[in-house]
Image (cartoon, rainbow, N blue to C red; front, side, top):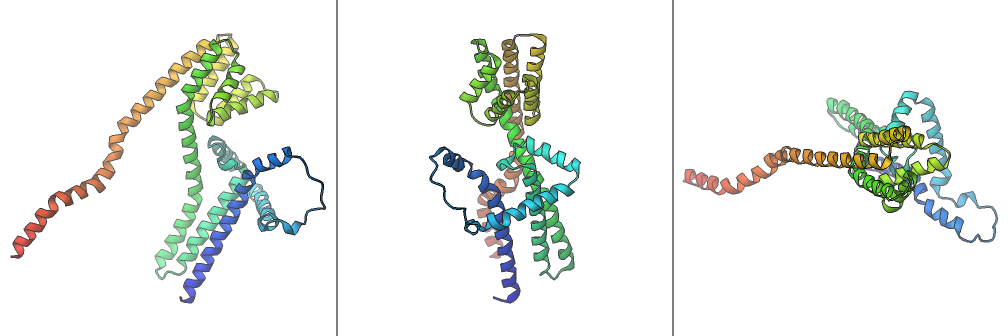
Amino acid sequence: MNQPILFLLVIAILIISFFYLVLKMIFTTRLKVAKRIEEIQAPQPEEKGEEDPYSLPIQERLLKPLFHKAEKSIMKWTPYALKLREQQMLTAAGHPHHLTLQEWMTWRMVFWIGFGSLFTFFASFLETRILKVVIPLVGWIVGYLAPIFYLKRKKDERIQAIEKGLPDVLDILTVSVEAGLGFDAAIVKVVEKTSGILSDEFHKMLQEMKMGKSRREALRNLGSRTSTDDMNQFVGAIIQADQLGIRIGNVLRIQSEDMRQKRRQRAEEKAMKAPIKILFPLVFFIFPAIFIIVLGPAVIQIIHTFMK
């Protein structure tokens, strides 16, 4: 193996190892939460001497402090408007992997620089000048846009899950309120009986109310976190009913029927778009195979006939 290829392989391994350690450092902390809770609840053993700092893993001793310093520097030099926009997108996406704004901005910057540098490094071994310019440019652009598209995809998946599950949640709320429970108790029933995004969001709403926020403020925060038209419509209807003294049971039943109708319309819309989406793979993948199977023997026979 010649030296340039060996050097290229070593650099690639180092870059991949760096990304692995950074991502492991970010996500491992969250995976240890349950283990820490169990350790706290378990009987405490006798106290031992002070823990040796050199017994910690290398990512805890070296990479984690560097990562925290990078977080502070990046957040310091990031414009406020960009931080506000990223925070809104991160909240709408449901904070994937429980990432905070500081961690997300740092991860995005590391990915951008690492991806662009990797493409630039590979392009340096090419002989064509135009490729030496185009490939690094593509790498830097992809490294910048890929996290944005990832966050947007998470946001769209979250919105679809909320729109799909909201009618069922409203049915539970309607039945609970009409059975005699208060609205807050009905929300508790939803949290107990369901799981998923909506259950988590209603649980956050209850926690905010326990911390002293009013129901209206907690509902508005619920609408801003989910960033969906259906949820904002539901929140607005409940707040208005609370202000005007209207029976919440009737409002919930109307909202449930409306949301169910919207869900049915979305399903019909997707069904109408299906033939158009099938057209591309049908034309470029299925039809050529059919033509080869049907016309192939005839073409071979014609070729043999002309060759004779």
